[in-house]
Length: 173
Image 1 (cartoon, rainbow, N blue to C red):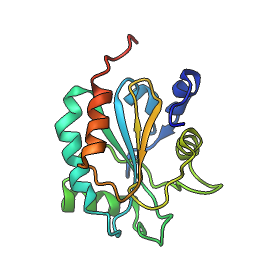
Image 2: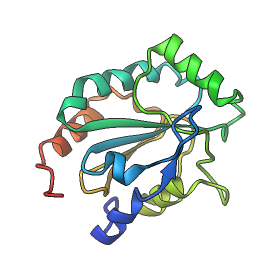
Image 3: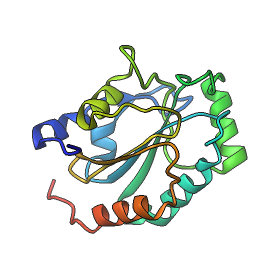
């Protein structure tokens, strides 16, 4: 149910997004392909906002092993991300020390969801129900798990899933 075929996996990340408050888009597949990824829709004024700290902890702990958190701010849920991208960037950096990659503000649900979230939802059958929903992608770009907002980034099951994916050798590129 959570896996996607390899043809779909190659396409999942072949999308361009701007880094938060940046001007030049990057292709997610070219930039992050071959890494284990945790894709998270974020918000600055949410009860789950303190998860930024644990997300940064995962980034710090596993980056050298080929892991990255990718954050996508969204104002989809009760207007909890109302600021500009510059304001979001300053908040994340100054309040939580976020250094993991953050991207442009997007919609993550409904017919106007950005293509990445359309693909994540199609692959899992689960759209984000709130801020800080997490999708775990394998090195080959398949969605291997998804976790609700209530699951903290340092949850034993989530960490075990990351470690399981990191134990799989990267494919020759």
